[in-house]
Amino acid sequence: MSEKNSFSVFSGTNTRYLAEKICASLGVPLGKLQITRFSDGEFAVSYEESIRGRDVFLVQSTFPNSDNLMELLLMIDAAKRASARNIIAVIPYFGWARQDRKDKPRVSIGAKLVADLLSVAGINRLITMDLHADQIQGFFNVPVDHLYASAVLLPYLQSLHVKDLVIASPDVGGSKRANTYAKYFGCPLVLCNKTRTRANVVGSMQIIGDVKDKNVVIIDDMVDTAGTITKAADIMKHAGAKSIRACASHCVMSGPASERVQNSALDEIVFTDSIPYSNRCEKVKQISVAAMFAETIRRVEANESISSQYLV
Image 1 (cartoon, one colour):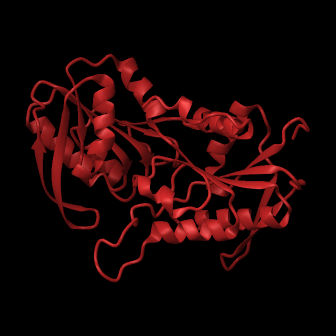
Image 2 (tube, one colour):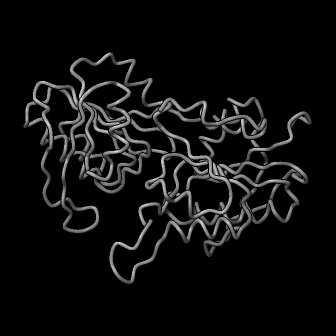
Image 3 (tube, rainbow, N blue to C red):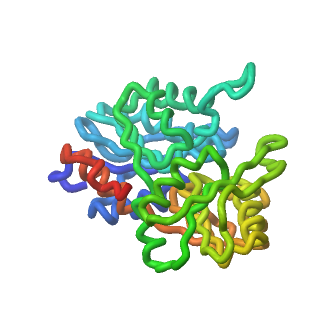
């Protein structure tokens, strides 16, 4: 690491692909970190270079399995014990964010628990993107830089030059996000009203708005099993939509998701690379957010405004 830089960037195991692109954009090498794994599943973290008095940016999305979160916690603890000046967690995808409140009696609030774990471990700042619920920022007592995938998704949609555009939300909860896109493009907004029989299972769905002879773009923050988004696409196709695309920040795509997308009425589904995606599906496209996170890291180090890089 060049002495002119007062910061270092390190990565956990499963987000190294993104950390390498972030470092390439910053023009700095990825820091040397060793994670030793034992036969019983336990692992240990050690920094292979001095970080005393430095700002350390730890890049790790906390998607399942839980090893990703545990790795990050150990990285934070090791950095604190190695006398790092500031410890900044860079979490492109913040896992457990769907558990942001008590929606029925006697349940955990996983997002708050993860926030407490990160805080107790010793972070000084959090950089993340498109939290499932904006209020999760309030679970932290340290500064939170909340980035938006719209910074890369909007330019991509603009490059398509789609006519008769309609923005859609797959559920009422995502209407605020979708409405932001609709205002940006100056086009109508369509909502899908859904009911769930249980987690990851959609019961029924109705479209609120007109999609006939329109090119629809469905906006969401994440796609898990793809049940909601593919059902919405199929209903819109049946209602007369000309084409249907989807844009989502986080490519969770678990279980039958890839097969569902491939067999659905979706023409294309676009994600960021906040989560790695290995199950190849012809309809899935990923756009990198590495440059956006690199610029945010640069601005944090230079004490510059971050909000000025938001498109909406």
